[in-house]
Image (cartoon, rainbow, N blue to C red; front, side):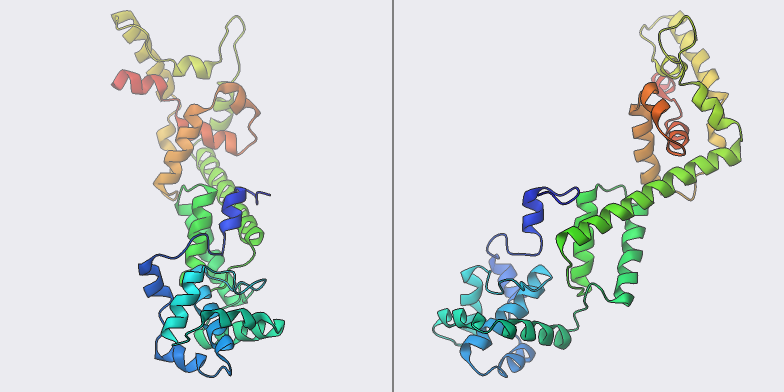
Length: 300
């Protein structure tokens, strides 16, 4: 089942081996240095040594331990590690899971030895939420892109990945908070510029008696002919738009890419949709769209 915004395939690929690592990846994530070898050498049997090495390198590569099946890795990984440990028969690793608790014990030992942090850690949880909220506010990324950024941050800071649904829900929640903050910030700026601006913009959404389109759509309509009369009418609409003095709305505290995205949504929203949109989102969309359709055409 999809998790929030993730497809089945994306959710299934999370925190696991999707395909065999490339040669550069093997050399980067599956190379055993002297510190690794000293820790591995403390295991009693070759099966435990190789299994320990598999877990050690798995968490480096995917960002989490494969607790359900620590040997659910491509065979090329096992062979690569066995060669470095001079274990001739890599198949001995199959005995690694004969005692279920061994893999768990090794996972926690690796976590402590290499400074991995559980996702539930309070301090790292605060740092992660600060990153996620900051990224969601300053960027205009979709949920999947933000999810991937979150995974990258957790891996870079050695915070063990949580379950896919846990992370997806947190990303979705943070995006909703950022969107509410955006709407409230823009609408608040509009109210500070002119207390009646919101009502004036809403008035554009209705269809006047005897007409077929709303005032908003009328103002947005570009010139259809290149005649002097059409140009004059377009300039009249520009004057009507300018009367709203939307340039007074101070939005210097909002990231430019956020404003650009919101403006595109506003410009692409029809009057009936905007009319049904709740506040403060409606005022934010109308303030940012600046009903510039005909204005852009005239400039062009």
